[in-house]
Image 1 (cartoon, rainbow, N blue to C red):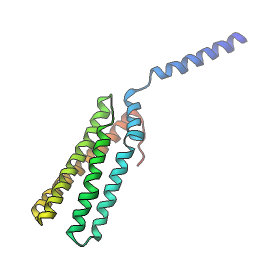
Image 2: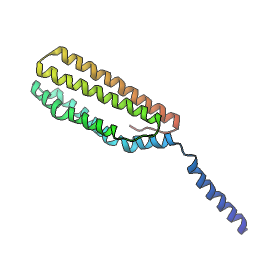
Image 3: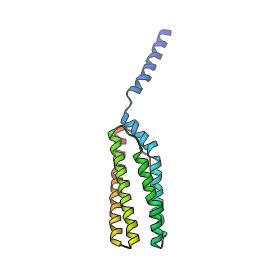
Image 4: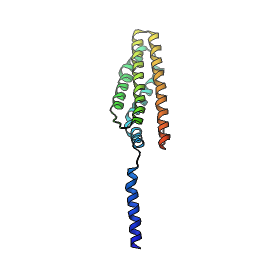
Length: 160
């Protein structure tokens, strides 16, 4: 009887040890990317959306200029630094991160153009700025789709 118990314990111990050998580095990195690495960048993006939502109440271009200059652009710069600082080992997760970086870059270009257009009181520049921001939104959709696709591939769930 003792031999059977000892044998069962040995099998359980071996299974526990071998389970770690078969972990998926992409799935592990993806979970860390979403649950740890991107937390601050996502919070900054929520702050950006909250700031832009205030624009409806603004009545002067000076208020918009101040918002873009003192809140939006520093927010985007900080988010870009956070995302660039994330160290990744897998191509799959890195390609997703690159989409987010591209989106931030397009947003930054768009809001810099917005600032220029507001200062120059030039509607054409502001229209060009909006086009850049829209392009960034499309990349954000691609980023979210890539997240969902990789999660499905790895049997993971994303909660928004």
